[in-house]
Image 1 (cartoon, rainbow, N blue to C red):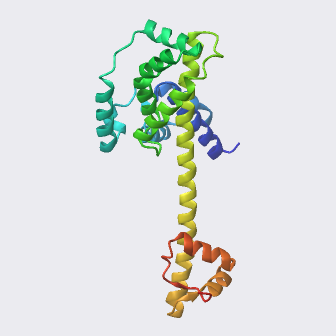
Image 2 (cartoon, rainbow, N blue to C red; image 1 turned 45 degrees about the vertical axis):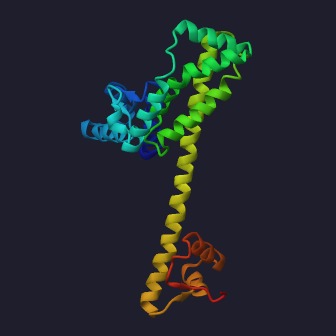
Image 3 (spheres, one colour; image 1 turned 180 degrees about the vertical axis):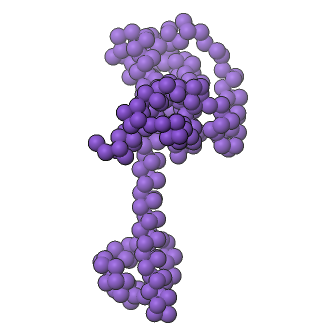
Length: 247
């Protein structure tokens, strides 16, 4: 395994560990993770900087001020204010709600959902800074909470059921982040494709002092005319240097 691949693998392992620890890792854990790469102080500092940039605290969790946008802070303040009207439940009460939900008691299931709403907020904070708005993370987390609370009958005890519920919430948030990352990659590919065609079209336009036809550009780039036309559509028809002779 080359160093670049190993580095990426270790970085992903550290980020996954951070999620399990409330979105923070210790310097010792980072050093241990990258020991195989024989990183020195300067290289490790680059890793620390990268982690902090991606909302991972080093030694302690980051304060909300460090990773939330102003829009997210305002949303969070308003949302938590609405939750403050709810009763604070004891550990024993929550356990009773879980047992009731395991027995398909709809009233107890509703109480369980209510008692978990603030937990969803805390879990959502772990996944902020990864391309998904806090509001969306909380919304999807609440949906996962509602669904997961109806699927606890297979658990052997309240502790296992609680673990299942938390995992359901975290899994959905991770899926949401992955979906956003996939969408971002697709958007980047489209952007790169449009830029590539636009730059070549402009180059030919500057040489010929006229708009370039689709067939000319396709031949020049070694691409099909269909590819060029699809790219023009992807750009919202904003590539001004191309003239489609078929239109």
